[in-house]
Image (cartoon, rainbow, N blue to C red):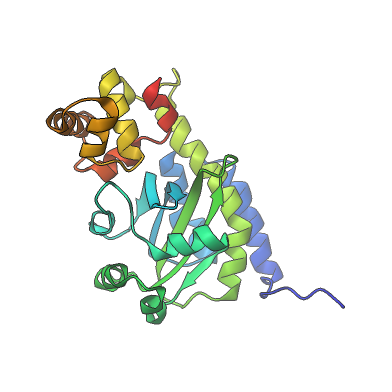
Length: 257
């Protein structure tokens, strides 16, 4: 029986553009380079008005965002969907974590994903149609994840194929841009130098989704002390909340060295 692909292959002209996009990603060295690539060349193949991407970790308890890079994403989206303890609620990421394949979400189908709060935020912030995919790292503990939204035309089978072709190359470029830029010439993130040894440990457990009470018990300190240290971490990293602090901690292993 001849092989039949489960979705339509792109036209030859589109495949040539995909190859050009893959080659352009090899030149991406900074976060600005990556966003410029997404806003420019990527638009020609997968038109969208908003993009969010980054590094995340998934486990049985949910999703933890470790790094976030976005372009045109609605303000307040991540805060609106961050749960107590730093977990992030997204049925799209959850479904991707189970299926490991591109996720196509049309505006009329969001209620069927079973998360009323996410459905409400999705529509209130005008995200419309969405296409998303990710790549697991070698340890399978974290993933690079990409989400395109505010797509005027509902994405279909071709968008799924394009994501399969592009996402592995996007993941390499994104990690190079995020980590090389943070590490700098001395291989030490600039934000890490601002933290004391105890604050690094607190940030580590924050990134694991632990509450102040849990961190206090783990570290053998009072909850009041941990609360003060969390606030100190937030101020030193110049962020407004725990989610953003954990998003800066792209390499959690550095925090406990």
